[in-house]
Amino acid sequence: MKRLSFFICLFSFFLAGSAHAQWVGDGYFDGMISPSEAWDGSFAFGLNGKTGNSENVNINLEFAMNCETERVITDLVCNYFYGRDEGTTNADRLFAQARQDRKLANPNLSWYYSGAYDRDRFRDFDYRVSLHSGLGALLYEFDDRSLRTRAGAGTSREFGGPMDEWIPELQFGFDWERNLTERTRLYTNFDLFPNLEELSDYRVNLRSGFETLLDEALDMRLRAFVFDQYDSNPGAGFNGNDLNYGLALVFGF
Image (cartoon, rainbow, N blue to C red; front, top):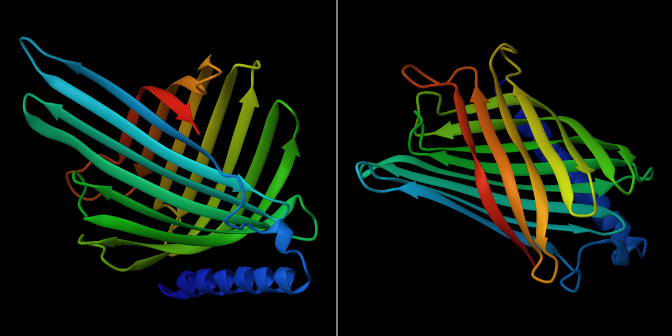
């Protein structure tokens, strides 16, 4: 059972790769990602601190890239959080994720596969690797709003901790975006990962924020955000909820 979702995930990757080869063979290479495709990217940086009777500093960084063609949507994101309080490190956390959606005959449906890496010095494991794949659906997309959902299965493993083995998981998630005006937007990315062997054991990843454009020429925005990770079984002596929030300047490129 522990290897079931791992093989499901690998089989899904194989199906997606086969679909890619078929599209290329049928002459649809223009719909795939090529080195000449234009990627959209952004870099975000936030810093706050205090000195005097007490001293602390908190840094948040994000690097993101995405590319959408006729048949493929690719999203890459990497977040890093670091904090010190009175000379002692109290936060050191890295999260990176890559996901690709390959559109099916119905362009509102897609087959996705994703991988994630999660490292946190203040957890009971060294790092976590996650692999998932499944079916995505674009429920609606207008000029000012969109909602894309996904449901699939996969596996994750926490290396260097008490549960150092592959755990089969389900995945349910969505990406929502709403443009309030030409200069402001809201967004939320949500994923739920129930343990297939014990559904009461689950993980949650949530990224949500509000952005407003400050300088169109520089493509500079101000972002208020929350990044929350919840684990229903965090290990003895650890809090199940890890919440980061703050402000950041975002530069598009």
